[in-house]
Length: 281
Image (cartoon, rainbow, N blue to C red; front, side, top):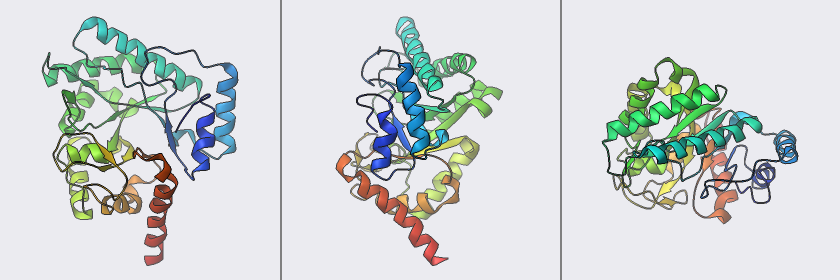
């Protein structure tokens, strides 16, 4: 949701299109620095969250696109960590419980394994500084030199974190990214197979959120191009499965589809799957 004019506008904008969960950037996602949140903006955000009936656990802030916790150059890695900690400070001020982030990129300067180890080390530092916020890694499409496109990448980071991971780390499953990375989720049977693999590799206890996006490109394309629901290569069955599957209950399901004008229609469509499912039982 847009936070134009202040983060306190995001809950109002979400409620206006029929959303019961939402994501936002707490500052400009394409700039390193931003003004601190004002006490009034913080107060009004919390008041709007409450008055429009949102739960903090259903709000999924996303960090800046500039941040790369796996950056191989020490100075740029340090800058990314500092920016990430600033994101966590903003989440803390807004009483939010999670932050969603892309793991990082090795920029073809180091190996995937070395990049994942840097990410884990920075996550550990962030967890120590902000123990009340869950760090939610998003699976990627594998475009360019991004890591996190295989479930094994995410599992490796969680293993490096050890006991801290169980309480302080999570995963956001992005449907377009998973499909582009080669995970076929086009049918309920195929989706269940992917979730079985997720459970064996990562563990379902780490699944904290889901991004709902169709894909403009085909299975295994490793190209991150979102499409409106049912208008891409994935099709509607995957999203019907998510809405009907109890595994996804009580977690934020966030649309990241490209056409804002379609969001109210897409939200209504998703909730209609629940109505249809209920009428069958």
